[in-house]
Image (cartoon, rainbow over all chains, first blue to last red):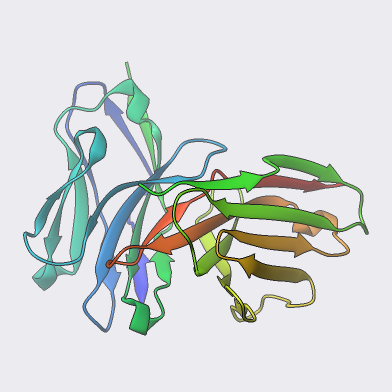
Length: 115
Length: 115
């Protein structure tokens, strides 16, 4: 079955500390992988995506993620967290148009940032 | 990224009335749009895929007659919640698919409260 698991429901880090948000997926075909961020009461903003090539992808706001096929993971990282990074983060997996193009979302990880 | 708007951003209605939510692609044409529902502190649940010029494809368990979707133009999809009840209160988000990697770009969401 296709699924996305974000093991951490809530993470708190200190401002300036590094961050890693975990994401594991199960997908039968070659996956397209995404990280989105959602501020309260807002829509989702795309942080980064992976569909082929270099397994380390860079995104906006200083985020990066690494695709590890052997571990079925796509963890999100940031070397130094800012207070404005506090939000909900969603990992998602999808396929090509021929595969329906739908996204499957993880449960989300809420990030809190301590001053 | 792509630009998607939603209108209204918030709506309060009485039980039994119908509410229409608009989702517009402001930059490129969107032959396919998606409608999601999100409960508080929860992930996104795909309701249906909206296809320009044809019937929408609904996910299992979503009532077609309850949630009417119309995709009459290449830039506009609408979701009408018919005979709304308090349990329909939720955050509704649309997205459009764009580009060779089928990336989805999301609207800002519509908060519906049914009294």
